[in-house]
Length: 76
Length: 304
Image (cartoon, rainbow over all chains, first blue to last red):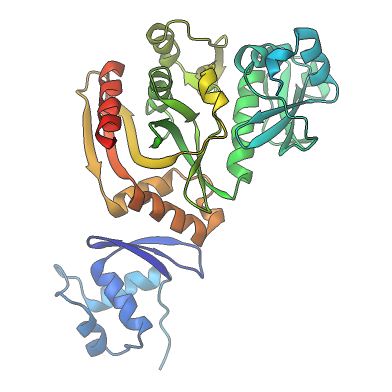
């Protein structure tokens, strides 16, 4: 996935879908952690440099990324 | 090199109704066939400075012709054909010249995929170009008309062509399309402006075209480096305001104005990012053209 960063925002090009996404720093760090092989909640949580804002949860963020077809949930 | 002006009216009609007329508009050669008087007359009025191409090759083979069947005679309509195929719904015959201009825009925006094509005006001064992306009704073309008649070179009033290989802007200077109130504004603001007769009741309202400055047409082979991205918005009575736009916001607003971004994939993505990284970006609100020109003059002066 190609990406450019300006301050705390990223634009991301998904080579598979051809879609372009505007992402915040948390979502981008999560994607980068997944790409590096992180899988457990603990590993993914560690990838987030700051606590998630408001009542955002790791699960909700992953669900957003799944909805954007940037990640795919698979059974273990 | 011969230009359209070199052909007298009879010769122009003969070429257009016969073998076709090959006109160079920036990097493209258009071979046009037509027998419709309004198209021929406006070609003579608005395209006298454009070179005739004698290479035998044309990028676009287009015709503007009366619709076939009953519509040839009853409430006559006109069609725009590309390679012999009608690409749009027919329009009333009175809209023959606008359909030529709109059709040509479509040809470029749907086929020039070695460029990122933005819905934007582009003007240049001192070797540095301003891209003005904007949806219809923003005042982009009125502003463009004023700028190019006050020291700025016209690259295009409608299509910003960003060359994928190096990010340079490729000129496609053609007549500036004006709508509704902007027609009268430009007539008043630019003494001596050469305008086609307005065509009324189009899908965009009343439409007229302003002849491109001959100097801009003569420099159509001269590329320009993008220096500014300026999102214009006319607001009646508003004070002029130039507000910085940054990073991802600039990127997404440019992408919204890109005709062929979905086609280009990663190359388009990189081209857009190149513009964001290489240009200063602003939202620009204006109501008086004098204020707008002064703002652009300041930008150009600050860049020297």
